[in-house]
Length: 461
Image 1 (tube, rainbow, N blue to C red):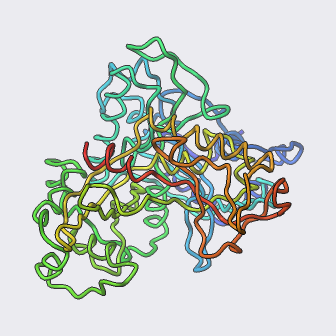
Image 2 (tube, one colour; image 1 turned 180 degrees about the horizontal axis):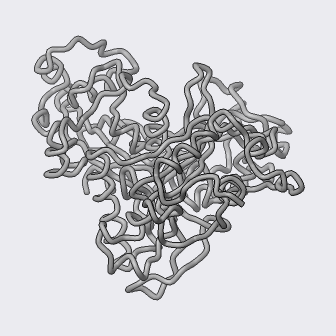
């Protein structure tokens, strides 16, 4: 059979790959695949390799097209109402070998050998379609921009250090900015041996965070480049300092100033009563235009939280997360739950404090939840799920006030559950009728971080 392309010639591979654009696997692959039923995660990529590029799928440490140093990756897209494409999920790369990575440096690492140059095939996911009929929308080679590569190198070093310290079981995607270490395998990861610790660790793979994949997609599709403001102005800057150091250096000149003084120094006009006031003030301090998002924050999926402290250092409020849907909550597993996913993000806390009636800017802090505290948050999630599943939300009703069995602040030092709705009739359907009230729906609730936890474990540490 005559080869369809030359595996040793990058231009030949790319030209052959780009024939996939706006086609489906059913249209471009060997008709033999029509005799098979394919379903499940990962099968799109395996079919693409075997029946279009005509090589056997493998898990070797080298790139798929090793002669030209090119790795093939396929990933699903979703399309927004404005027709722009976004990633449906993070992009999972190669498995992390805990025992080997400790003896590697970045340039000799399995990550770099495999992923220095990537041939990306993005297809439009449709839950109602056979995967053979997904339309391939974007095909192109991806090489890392210089600034991104410096951040990715530091991310890789962070992952390696945690493994070297015998803490592979504590790895979290919140440890890093663009390059993550996501669980890989059944129920959130099979277990593997790790160095310097007898505890097994869940299997993990290098991955690009969903926000970073969105940036890749926008670059390939030439979308909305003007919607983002950059923090890092030159590669020289990011070679000398980490992203964290660059961000902190922009905030430090304003420590100790009142909100009014900061606004005056920046020379901007902001509506103090607007809901977006603190977000706008943060952007202005970072030197990003108010109508733009911070590019590096979007790529790293950084969650910015502004906290106003009382004079005794206790936050004025607990911190809320998005409301959970009761029916979806009981179908989740902890390892892939929405709550755990949020907690494993990187956060940027911006602290202001009331001093003699004035709001003073105290400090900013990058933070991600330590492993031991994630285990505590898990207890709150487990109890909440059990309560919803059993129909036991309401404990009693006194003078029309409903008291619930949801875990409160006395249950846990890290987190609790309480309403997050404008009105009591702002509800979600229940999977099981509530036993006390006989209701089939209930007021929206969410998980919260306790104000005392924010004070003790984030602000004062």
